[in-house]
Structure formats: structure tokens, C-alpha cells
Image (tube, one colour):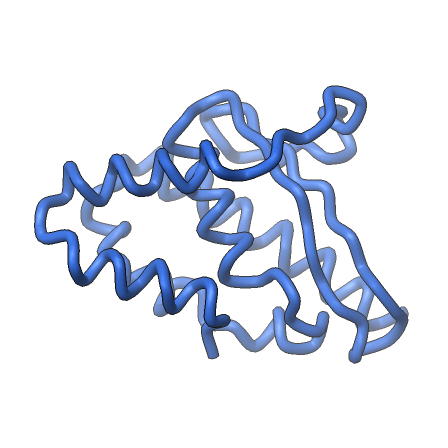
Length: 142
């Protein structure tokens, strides 16, 4: 149940044979993201469990299970900023109900990230996914 934006990333990853090229692509995805305003880099938006500093600012458009999910994100580490961009592609535009049904480990596994991220980065990625799912579940519950 991946978005077209995520499918595009997955297709690019299939084309890039070398992990170093994929790593550079992840960094480039992060560079293309608009920066998160300093005013939103606060404890309430900070993701715990990440070795790097990560902030996720959710935006919910509408109410109930049909509300649309989006977010802005930021990190002080280039690779993590790229991971935020990948998660944005995976979740942005879905309804809050759909967010809960995304099998993030399987979708991210298609990119081969599991084998190439340090355990700290993997834990941080899981923490970001958990934060996104929690926010969407709270919005769906009203």
C-alpha cells in the first residue's frame, strides 16, 4: 500500500545497484525536503529513541478516520534527514486510518535499508514510524 512517491523511490533503489549510490540518493532526498522552521524544533515535536536529533511536525487535514495525514520533518544528520524524506513519501497524503495499515518494515525492507543501517539508525527509524502511527491513531480516534 505504498504511495506513488514511495514507489518512485523504490524503483530508483532497484536501479541503483551499489549501496553507496543508494546512500547518496537518501541524502539527496533529505536535501530536497523543505527545512522545518526553528520554532517547531521543540521537545513536543522531537522524536525520542533516535541517536540524531529528529523532529516531526504532523499536520492533519480533516477529522476522523478520513482525515489526511502529512508532516514536516527535520534532522541534524544528513542520512537521517533522508530517512525522514522516505517516511514522508511513504505516509504523506494517506488517511489517518491508512497510516495504521501501512506495513512500514516490509515497505522499507524493499529498499534494503535493514541491512545497511546501523542498529542506532534502525532504532531511530522505528521510533519515527511509531511516532507517525501514534499521531495518526490519535487523530483517527478523534
